[in-house]
Image (cartoon, rainbow, N blue to C red; front, side):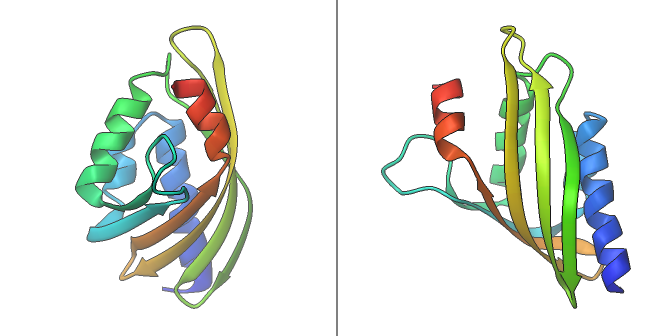
Length: 132
């Protein structure tokens, strides 16, 4: 795949989430994909290295809190070989009336047209405060 193909894969991935098609987004991950989320071991919330199954469970639980899903907007991307660095913003009304908004940086590795590994950085204190 070209770097343009890799960037388009990332755009398509976040479009699936914006359409509340979590299964469609997860289908874009390799079966052995890993997703690392920033955070210290003793901090509240989810962090560390997750398998695709663990990520599926996390997304299922997380998206059940939203009124009608969450819009994910890609703001910037840089790609080289099989790596894509992407900045994303989220916005989603929660069922309890609050609104979730966050900014993310993801370092993504692509393998054979699938997302193979992700390192995700975002405002973990905001998430811990909002959801706990």
